[in-house]
Each structure stands twice: as C-alpha cells, then as structure tokens.
Amino acid sequence: MTNSYAEALAAHGLEDVQPRYRRLLLELKARDAAAYERAVARYRSEVEGVTPGADALAAWLSYGAWLASRIEPGRLVRISSEGLATPAPDPAPSDPMLIHLPEAPNRRALVVAMPSDPTDAQRATADLLCE
Image 1 (cartoon, rainbow, N blue to C red):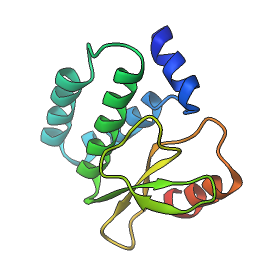
Image 2: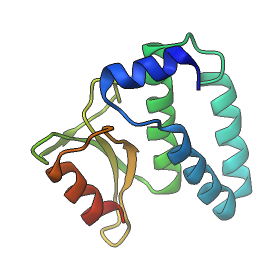
Image 3: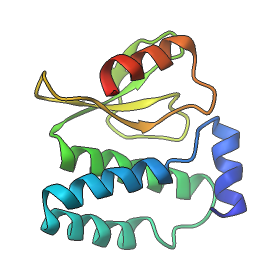
Image 4: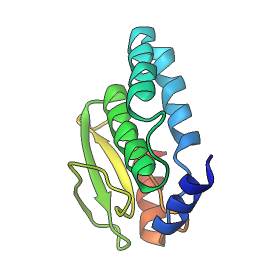
C-alpha cells in the first residue's frame, strides 16, 4: 500500500479494500476461471498505475463494485451511519459504506467498502446481510 493510498483511506475514513477484494477474486477464481482472468485484466488496465491518492481509491472502489457484480448480479448501495440504504450508481471515496446487494434474495451481500470505524448500525447491516 502506497503512502498516498493510505492517506486517502485515512482521509475518507475507510479501511483498506485490497484484502477484501483479494478474497472476492479467490471466490471468483473458484467459480469461473475465465471470469477471474477478465477480472485480473481489468485490474491491470483500470487500477494498476492509477495516480495515487483519491484517484487510486476511486479506481479501487469502482473495481470492487464491478468485481462484486461478477460474483452475484445485483446493485450497489450506500449505507449511512444510521444504517439507511440509498442507491450508489458510482462508488466514490466519500461514500460511508458500500455494499453490493444480490438480486437473488437468498444470497449474501458483499461489502465493497467499509468505514475504518463503522457505526453500530453499519456493523449490524454488514452482520445481517453480508455474513
């Protein structure tokens, strides 16, 4: 993790997304090797080498939202500090918490971005929908 990426995470109050996305990539690889290769190619073209800082963080969040949608079709939502969900068509570093809600009601949601210090409502949302 570069210093400017770490600074952007701290400035926006987000935890590092990279370990979470690695787990998503491993899940995708286990399901569909061709989709995994496309995900790696997309990472190389859209995330790797992006200007450090907030631009890199925005690229990571966009990649994470795309990656989650490859695992389960669905939609991206913001979760406010009060636990309220609103649509998030384009992920941004200023979003407090981002989760991908699958279309299928019996599938778990996927966290795309989590605050470094989530509120009780955000933590409860993640526990209920994502675990």
